[in-house]
Length: 153
Image (cartoon, rainbow, N blue to C red; front, top):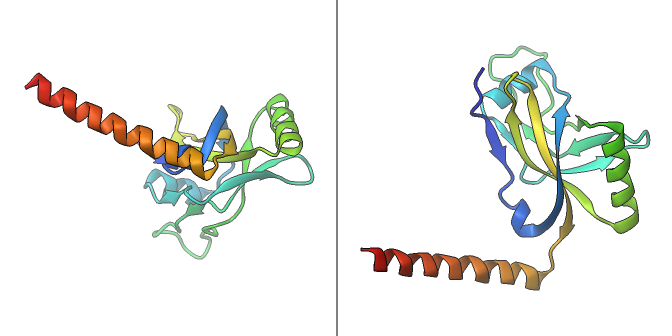
């Protein structure tokens, strides 16, 4: 199996403070999994929410249509069900409803058996000053690395 599929949400750690991470399975159709194996998916603008039955769905996940499919192709931005254990679902649902946290997808990858998995995180939105602090820390780290590199020559 091709194990190199790794679709990431690079904005997540900048826009949110990540509190807890989980690995969830995704319910996909035939053409959806083929598109993911080709790397034709995006989770940059997606988020997760619960429906009335307590099931977790990923919303706004873009999986491009499979090019070799017939008229049985999938919808690119359909809601897709995430598979977690009941204990984890109850804990996440309680956290989201009581403390106003959100669940965001961090990455989509293939496990060793060839199944699509999604790494999700319980997150809290960052304020503007937190984002500025993150940028400042990143820039100072880059400057420090440049200085270390110049001394090592």
